[in-house]
Amino acid sequence: MTRSPADCETMAELRQEIDRIDDALIELLVRRAGYVDRAATLKRGEGLPPRTSDRVAEVIARVRQRAAAQALDPDLAETLWTALIEWGIAREASLMADPDHAAPQEP
Image 1 (spheres, rainbow, N blue to C red):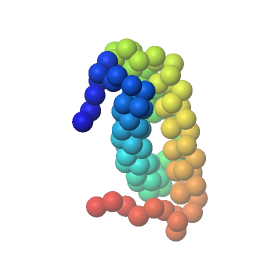
Image 2: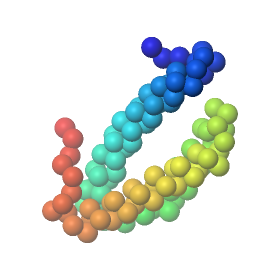
Image 3: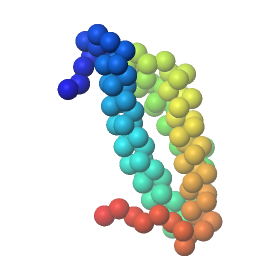
Image 4: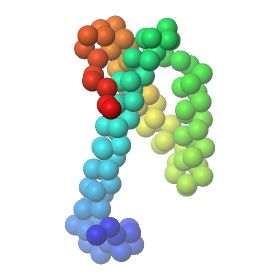
């Protein structure tokens, strides 16, 4: 049973809800990482580099806008996505340099 923050009457209940959210975030990050791996394959085939500065700027701008629209600190969102993006670029660079170790593609 999911509770809103206001419905949590104890720290144990609140922590349980935070743990549920953390589990969902991990699942989403796993899915996102699969797309990063696929991007490495596609970029290699299309002759694109791991880092595309215009795309990075586009993603950060979009994330900041979406965060602000939902009352989340845009600076926090930018910090989190910058870490995700930098990890993704490093992952793509690694896979692109060693295609034999690329992760299997999902169906």
